[in-house]
Structure formats: C-alpha cells, structure tokens
Length: 173
Image (tube, rainbow, N blue to C red; front, top):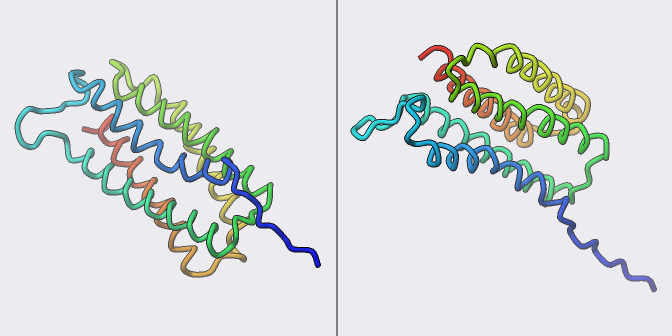
C-alpha cells in the first residue's frame, strides 16, 4: 500500500502573497523616508495629508484584502493547483506592469516635471490592463464562482481606484 505524502509548500507558494503587501509597504516606507519633500504636501496640522492619500489607503486595503482572500481561496479550496500559464500571466501583470507602474508614479510624484512621466505611465497602464484582462478572461471567467469573482473585483477595482487617486494627486491637485 502506497501512501501519498502531501507536497511541502515552496517559497513560490508564498511569493504572490508577499507581493500583495509590497505596494502598501513601499508606499508607506517611501512617504516616511521622503516626508520632508514638499511635493508630498504633508502638513504638521490637520489635515495632515491631501484627501488622495486616505483614498489610496482605503482602496489599497480593499485591494489587498481581496488579494489575500483570493490567495487563501486558491490555497484552501483549490490546493494551489494553478496552471503554469496562469501563474506566468499573473507574474507578468505584477512584474512587468505593477512594479514599473509603482516606480513611474513615485518618480512622477517627486519630479519637478511629472508630465515627463505621463507617456511611460500610460504605456505601462495599457500593458497592465491588457495583462489583467488576459488573466481574467482566459483563466478565470469559466472556472471561478461568484465568491472568487468578488475577490478578483476587490483586487482589481481597489488597485484601480487607488491608482486613480494617486494619479489625481500627481497631475490634477
């Protein structure tokens, strides 16, 4: 009689979970590090920050909660059985879309000429939307039930609204 031994989780199983927290951690750390930079418009009296910062935090929390719930759903309900192509598509959206977008937005926010970053931001935005849409429409549309779709909407729309608030802070405020 052969007994199957459950596979030990690898660091890759936790990579996407760790990456979910990176935008919040990086944004918070960079705001603290650059708190004396006038471009952040931080104030010693109330209100301490522009309205966009609490909006970024609120929508970021919604997005992160959706991502964590989705990760947990995949881990508990699906046993982390995702096709390699799906993992690659998600990694491409995060690594080639999310990370460059974060860096471009941060540099634009601190720049004396944020308009110089506008075209690269829009190019990365288009790529990121295409990558997320590919992931949703190719891998998720048939397989996912209403609960998992809710988690995806929290993640996608939370991040989207946080990005819009940040974009507004840089280019409209």
